[in-house]
Length: 534
Image 1: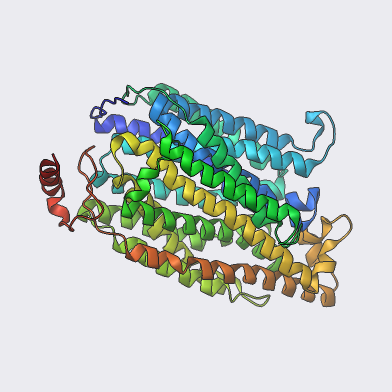
Image 2: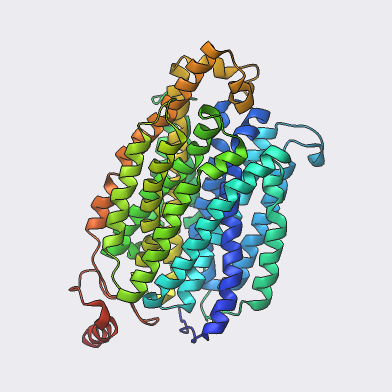
């Protein structure tokens, strides 16, 4: 494969492109946050509480299986056209989600199954949004300066996380939950216009070879793994033929995928990236971060709306402490990294804060006040703020420029697969624990859906309501207990990340085993290292 290094882009043009990228990032983040506050109402209309996580799992699974493919396609065919295609697919999925179970699709059907399928389509497009933004910035901005821009991205993400629950809550309370999906259409149209007219990226010359077999094997393996964590112990016994068969399929697919990738001319997930120490470690951190982040963001609104009796709009407001902690820390971290070139300490601090937040949330119960929950969420947000952009920065600094899209895709992939497995596993743990509690029978309701309607729960007789609230709170706390157990590994993995100088231009990364060099001499040290290597 032959490549041409990207030409320097004037700062004013970068800012113009950045505006379009921020709209696209806002599009992806808003959808996640808007839907999280609408979920209890959606599940109440379409089916029982056992479907709660499937609406999210389908979306994240769709994102996960296609993320590395979007990254590789961008490397091969150019980022702009691939990025715009992902936006179009996302918008088609959004429109279909809004029509799920309605006459607009030819009459009433199984609304929940339709919504799950359309959320998967939406997720396929969303996978290209996140990795596309990160890879495009990686093309335009050297790693040493990237902290500032990624800090801005983190700020936009935090703003979206604040605005999303508020918008989603307002839509749910005053309109229909369907507008939680329709609202994406005007914003996505604006993103398409801005990016199509203003985004002019460096061109690459490459031999186009797509690893279709690797992509198919990876998709099958990950899907089977998520189904195991979703169905195991709930739909089917762990020793059932269904679960054992999925286990065999997962193992066979992923092992075969490894063999295929070693021989593929253009692997969809280049295995040589994982020989770099920092890249392998930070991929593990990203996986665990996805586990924690998606779990918190989907179970906190459920706790607030059902146990604490908040409206959908108020549950969005109650998430502000988490967003505030994430926003402040993300922006400060990005500026410090740009100024000093130092980054190793931040994922360590983030891992400790993340673990602390999960431990605190594991103590919640039906008597937990909104003030106490807000303090716990601040701690969790601080941990997420230290980790989210720093993990991507370290991953990108560990790969060559020609692998930037694949590297960004792999890093995003591991965060997404962590989210996929985390949501599925947390959902299974929640449903299993809830079914064994006294609240299980009361929540079943007529048809399964009425039991999770927040208004109906508040109108239950006092004696029944107290038992139901206690069962819900205990089941959600049980989820955070397991989340805390899992994220113990985050600060451990982060501790072994080495402080490798951030590149000041689109040069080759230094080896993850070279001696640490002061940040102010990063470019000189890199030049010397390359001269010796040559």
